[in-house]
Length: 447
Image 1 (cartoon, rainbow, N blue to C red):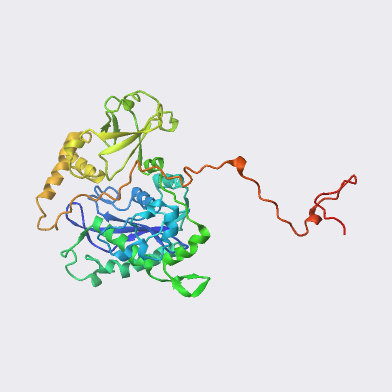
Image 2: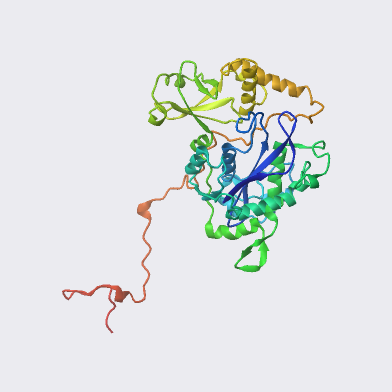
């Protein structure tokens, strides 16, 4: 697969109702040209000098992790989508897929599930992060890096960005075109979508248009004169390559989250300047214990979702070898949706007003004040405020266990008899000559 990120060239609404830009990252399968995953994230310019800007954000390593997670599960069809975006109304071999994977029995979109073996990526900072490399290693994915400033190393991605610009972006409200000369006046004053809506529209376009449109580069050796769509090419390749369900396990789902190595005290654990506690007795046993991780000075491994930081997960390296769910101590005060970006913004506000960066209660009050400001309605320079901050795609840290297709099937090995050997022409020439006058039972009788 080839993975790359590019500007979406569509203006959107930010968390505070202001006008922002957006980026799109997707994964393209080389064999079938299928778009196996798509991720739209906000692009916000931070405040301050270059290199020291605060509050800015774009595509991060965790967004790439969410992109990889999409490749291992079918895309759910939504009720407000076009019925032609259903897998049942496409060229996908749905009956064969349902027989192998029960997840296809639900209403799924016309986008195939292809587990990546090798990903070709550029050398941008999110792709070079240690977390992204660790996730690829856990999922059994090999990484190949494209050369710097060499777009021809990812030609399918470059062509896809042209397709999404011509067939999707220019038909979406807030399209900016290729420059100021093409976008016209009043783009930022017109109706705009939140990032979550753009994500929904992009996924529907992939299932409805991209996956079902014939591609000039897709042809089958059985029908060389017919151009195929990515879904039709996938149907041609499935009998040759086969399909095996590969849902992400509970342990792998935890590993997708951001790692943090912490010390367990009577106050709990601290992640990104937030204190987490658990009412479970299991966490109390880990106080003043050594995790056994010599590379991290005996600290314990914890994982958290930056888009939903109200809870985290602590791993018990000593006793149960299981994950313990811990909660932020001031979770009840933050009744609205918030993210790591909201927390960092609140921390900056407290420090600028002379406070301390470890004053968690003051930061919580600052985050609450941001939310109250949004409820007052947009200012003269803002659009209608979004319903909440961008929270990406949700990753269930405790998904259902993978279904074993051979569960309940018992085979008595002693009752299985070997199939009789078939005659092999010229077999007598392969036998060594007999010695001692004994007849060779494999040699045919002389005429």
